[in-house]
Image (cartoon, rainbow, N blue to C red; front, side, top):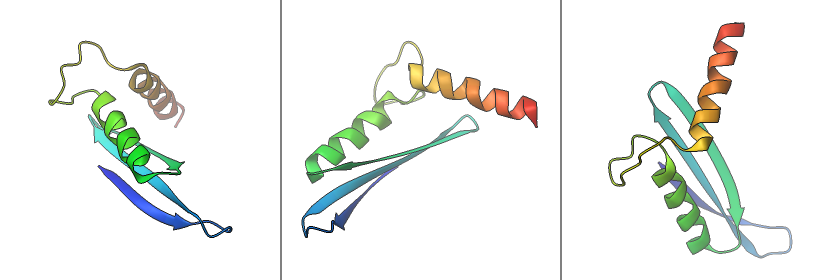
Length: 81
């Protein structure tokens, strides 16, 4: 799920913060990024949601590299604890 927030900078101009939280198969991932335009923030958030594995709106043959790397990191953390 993506959230776009408008933020006033010190110089008085605005930036848009896109926050994306995805939880699938027991893994949770959150990312945020700032953009000068709202449309850019919306596009980035939409693209990030489409890249995630298990997305039914787009056929994904293999998991994205990002999710594969995250799965490895989380499994290593769980083994250490």
